[in-house]
Image 1 (cartoon, rainbow, N blue to C red):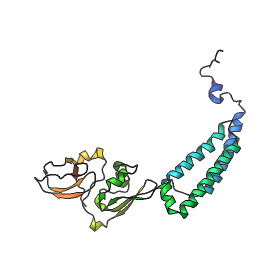
Image 2: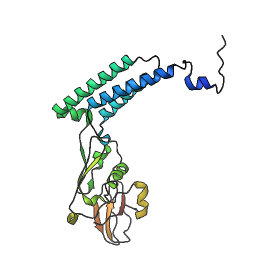
Image 3: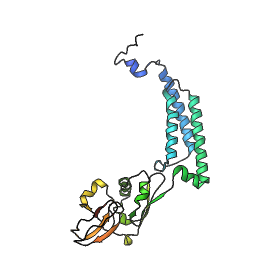
Image 4: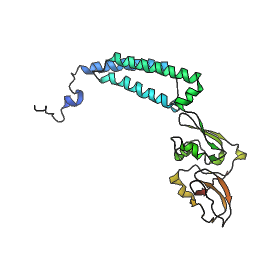
Length: 235
């Protein structure tokens, strides 16, 4: 049996495929209904800032987006089916919220817990290695908070939503520390490898951990995790 031929650049096929022109009116009606229904559902879900979304919240958004979008223009997807799916997802979200509020261990299990990644200017590379954000990404978040070096930081936490919360040291207690530069930017500071001779005395920081020490001219850069040292940012 010969396959049906397709006429290239056929306007009707491009615009509405095999549906009748009147289906455009149905799409409008479907879209208006789903949009109003979505507003009601989002009101029931409650308020949350975009930068506070947890992985579970993102999962809900994906599920709702598919359930709300498909019935707007797919003729074989009934609105009632989508409405049932959306209500079910909403109920699951409310149950999740209730469990999280009542049981802290359940919250830690489903959403993770805050992790201390910096303490007194020193990076905890082992903790960072267990989480998704890289050191470069963490430094980007710190630069966005106008933090020039780890010497300004008393404690920093990687939060459940992937943001970084920082407790700064008082201005008079800040120390020289590792600049918050990405790895592709440290060439500006003439990086040194461990066991090279120090040509200029000063404070130097291990790029992997943030360990900062004073080195005299003629001494050697000690071994450190990563074996890369750069000039420290002065307090």
